[in-house]
Amino acid sequence: MANIKTARKYAEIDLMNNKKIYVVKDGQLIEHDLPEYGETLIVSLGGKVDRLETTVKRKV
Image 1 (cartoon, rainbow, N blue to C red):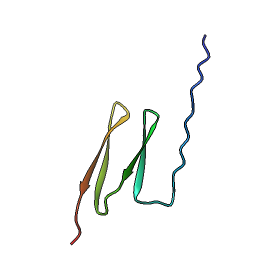
Image 2 (cartoon, one colour; image 1 turned 135 degrees about the vertical axis):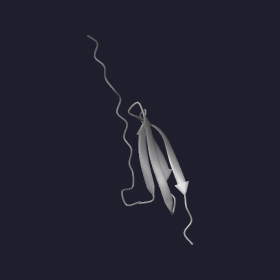
Image 3 (cartoon, rainbow, N blue to C red; image 1 turned 30 degrees about the horizontal axis):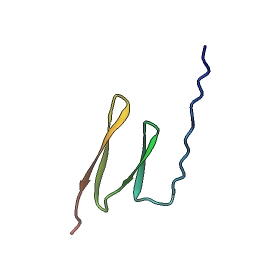
Image 4 (cartoon, helix red, strand yellow; image 1 turned 180 degrees about the vertical axis):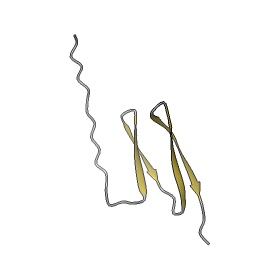
């Protein structure tokens, strides 16, 4: 039986910034800016993040 060592990656994020979301996909950290007004939908496929859909709205 082979010993498999997985490399660990670390990221430092600012927990005080409420205008971003972070998604981990295939070991990569994806930073996404949230709109001022609107919705961001995270779509998964096969248990993994497939895409982010953002709908921007304007407050008048």
